Amino acid sequence: MNIAHWLARRASAAPDSPAILSGGTIIDSYASFHDRAAGLAGALIARDVSAGERVAIIAGNCPDYLIALYGIWIAGAVAVPINAKLHPKEAAFILADSGARLGFVGGALAAGLARETALPLVPLQSTGFTALTGHGPAAIADRRAEDLAWLFYTSGTTGRPKGVQITHGMLAATSVGYPIDVDGVTAQDAALYAAPMSHGAGLYAPIHTRMGARHMIPPSGGFDAAEVLALSAAHGPTSMFMAPTMVRRLTETARATGQRGDGIKTIVYGGGPMYAADILEAVDWFGPKFVQIYGQGECPMAITALSRADIADRSHPDWAARLGSVGQAQSLVEVAIGDAQARPLPRGSTGEIMVRGAPVMPGYWRNEAATAKTLIDGWLLTGDIGRLDADGYLTLVDRSKDVIISGGTNIYPREIEEVLLTHPSVRDVSVVGRPSPDWGEEVVAFVVPMPGGAIDTAALDAYCLARIARFKRPKAYLVVPDLPKNNYGKILKTTLREWALAHPAP
Image 1 (cartoon, helix red, strand yellow):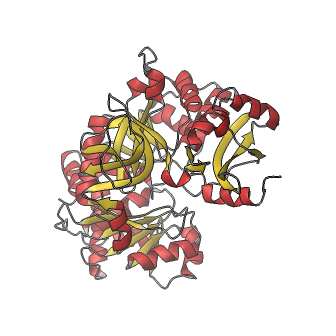
Image 2: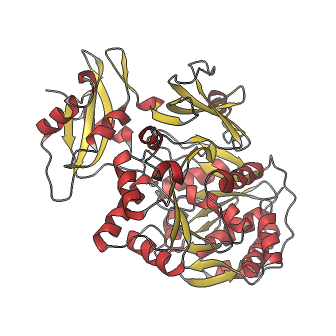
């Protein structure tokens, strides 16, 4: 089934209901949303874009983004959303690797990208794009569940990004599972796109379209904590995806201004580790508005979920452990812990997290070697280390590539990071390993002080020694003004390892 059918059904059932908004201003009803997307699909077909061919979107969040996305799907083509913050050379690599036929691009990006590719580029929010949407409408192309809908390129923190193949069936499975396992959606809701639509936030479009909710694009085109608070208060109920760093910034802004998040219905967080201190502060301030998901591009949004009740209810005897987990398996997947040969291990064991089910990718785009390493006997090997408790709650221990092996013992950086973040002088932290002639690897902590504050590394060392085993404590504490992050807000541990090498142990 073509996922675009959900838009057509909503446009037929409630044509005048508001669909796409810029802030609080209605740009499209569901009828015009569908008609403009169908017109764009007609224009793509007139340009000989065939079903299964790739069309890129390289733009920040804007109302035309959704028109482009659904126009591509109606034509039966495959959307290749690319983060607008990538360097033009990085974006050009994805365009070439995907074999895209053309690209819809944010106006400010067109000139730089045109120097790196000969691909036809059509600016969004332009008269040229508007003309394409006015083309004779196309009927929705026949697509099956296994046909590609979205080609998502991994963020590429190490090496070249790989193209994850996301099918129409995967989008449908993820969307159907969302109201069961994450949060109910109604026509009164608004999906607020504060995170990049080229990444996780864009995956929320199908379920909100299916239910006839509003799609609200912040006028800033991105995440601004004050803007999110104001839009939610004026035009809620809003639901949105946030990376953990965004949740922290929202909490800081709300506390500083005395706002309690009026109009915010749900904040779904994921995409990186949420430290216990941060989510406790957020819940204490905003109340039970938070749900956590654990997923990957290879199984988008759909591995596990931690409910708002588990996050907010501190009366359960295991509430602290559950808060530190990423929840239980979602309805359409199986989750297991595997050994080095991808064989399932008993509950309570620590090993690689594996998942299988309808939302799991069929493989990487034109990369059989990577696919063979990642999909084994139907299981997706996530590359994450974790454990399942007796009640099925999954706790992420760390990324397999981030585990530090010191003196033959596995040390998990996240455990140390959780401790350091509870120290009042520490605003942010990341722990990596660096080579050691005596131990193989040793622990190095990069710490960011609180604004206007300072770090006493001797005090931090004593703090760690009082809370974790001596062999786990960092051998060095390197104070930095900020941690390096990629365009999705993930900490670049590869860069931190390079920094650690530049500061060898005395």
